[in-house]
Picture 1 (cartoon, rainbow, N blue to C red):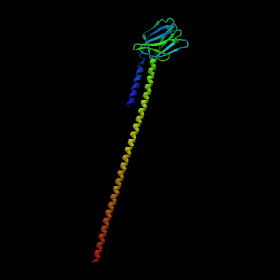
Picture 2 (cartoon, rainbow, N blue to C red):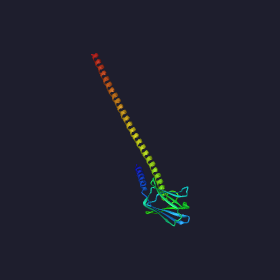
Picture 3 (cartoon, rainbow, N blue to C red):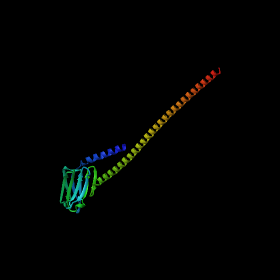
Picture 4 (cartoon, helix red, strand yellow):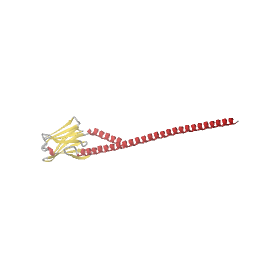
Length: 221
């Protein structure tokens, strides 16, 4: 039971953490040219966010960020990136931010999270590496809790079965003991009745014998 309560506490903590995960701001976007056909997109945020990187049909690089919003003073900077045609940033209704970058060979751009509390994190075409680690840890935790719950349930079932068996044994013993006592009382009553019958028979025979002797004495006079 304690393991189940601990698992519930951990789940509640994870849900609480997810609820506050949206408290994240995009403060700045830095487009940094690395070479003629490659550049970095540096996202300065409060913390690493869940991100999806894709190229749409028009060849525009689209960065979809979840649980984040743009700050009031967010700005965009360009460093050695004269070949960038257009950058659009929009907040989405689902508490996220979409960034559209129109530039030659945008698919080769590296996306980097720059946060105050951690070193820069480079992300790939899906979610960030940091997020992959968190998801893997969450899966391990879920499997561990499931195994713990299963073992706890099996243990509770064994204890319940043992208690039921013990109760049945105690009930059977009480019933058996009651039957023995009842049989003993019946036997005692039968023996008592037989003993009384024998005593009465002996007394009757003695009285009869005394009567016969008295008659014999009277006949002899």
